[in-house]
Length: 230
Image (cartoon, rainbow, N blue to C red; front, side, top):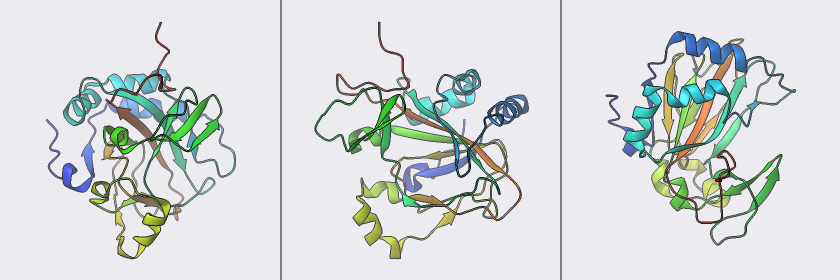
């Protein structure tokens, strides 16, 4: 059993993934074939990709989900990030407040709404975000040189912050780098304040980003990543 001794207090933790090297190699090779445009950080809409589904069904993932959420946890977003010297970016302090839903349906506590490709992105209420868990599987070693994630430990306990509230706290935010080895998992709560710097290394920083939720959505809202019920 993985020891998640600091997660509740810090809102994040690095754990050894325990995934076979063959799966890491397959993810690295197949996802790396996507053609990224300049300044495009990664690939979206991977929820039904066979390798992503294999990763989700792996016992290591399932144990974590049942420990941290429940057996009702479902994958609601899957992305692949590929930070390199050619596709390089930095992200300022933020919380992950946006989820992907199948349709725009006005409902108290949800919004603003923004269309994107085949779905709608919307800021979810805190009651949903606190029932979510992010798993980031590192496909490369990540450190401060190639732009690993930085966090402010414990900030997930501050609740849902507006941009103005986040800006007002900037002076007290202390970035803590989260280096990881290839195959490591970073567990995060979406409301944890985090950022990343540009890479200053020729080494890539590739990662699979998975978001799970075990909370039922109020009808008739529906996750874009899940098939429509028959």
